[in-house]
Image 1: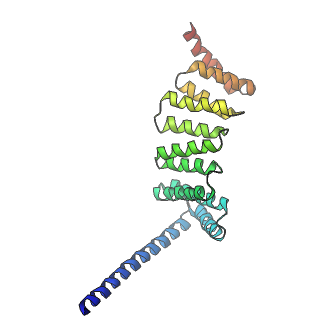
Image 2 (image 1 turned 30 degrees about the vertical axis):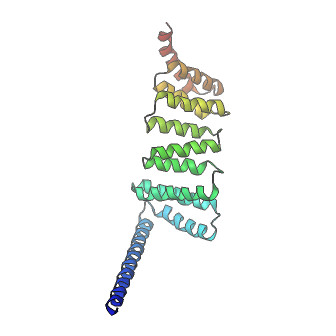
Length: 228
């Protein structure tokens, strides 16, 4: 019995030392990270804001802008240092925002999608953008973001990309940026006649834009032989 008691005491001591060592190491690493980020010219301003925001959200957990600022600045640090650790930290903070505020706004989903693109987590980015569109079907930048994700990162078909743009055109009111993005895409994939149609629309809306006028002339030259 005495031996068992001694072994039990030794085991407890080992566990306590292990746990204490882990927390001690974790504390040391956090201090080391804080020192590096606060002294690095590339990160010190963003990190100073992070420290401030952490205090603010601790004092007031309902401070939406504070949570958003934390996520945004960790993303910036991750991009500058090219370190996925900080990008994941940003993504998790956006999860916290979404958990606290639900699906009341599209911006956390759009911002998190951009983080996931940096992490090459394209399916997660796509899911975020689709949820964002459910929150605000009239926001043209969300259609542009989803189309860009499909064409630049996910290797989606031309039909898939065009479907995103077409859905946006049906839904968005005064979507000049969306029309411009779609026209540019159509031109890049050889859909010259369709591109010409949208550039003419843009030229009518913005008659002083010589860039549209020049593109129309170029496209008319490309389209004319096809008609003949």
